[in-house]
Image (cartoon, rainbow, N blue to C red; front, side, top):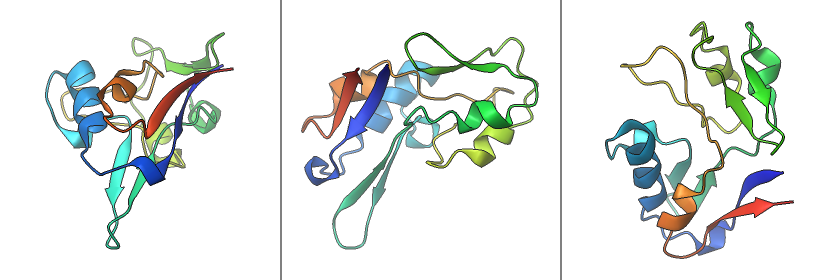
Length: 128
């Protein structure tokens, strides 16, 4: 099973992971479009919100277009997606992404682009 893991104690809040993710999937550096979130807290620490491949998005998908691949990653069949955005609202980590220029949402595919961009190792790609 492929998934991301985090160590928030290593996060410096540089947001490079968000920028790399949005650039890879949307061709712009816009943290709002990233499939992960770094929350800057008032106390100077940072919370990392990543997709843990829990499957809640698949459970609420009315059209059953979110399915789990053999790797354990939940994927969206964007050609069949109705664009209802139920999955976006039910994501416990709030990392399902909806862009104004696309009807269907996007989610983490555990590709590792954010991992490569993280200068401190706060995000890791794990394969069980």
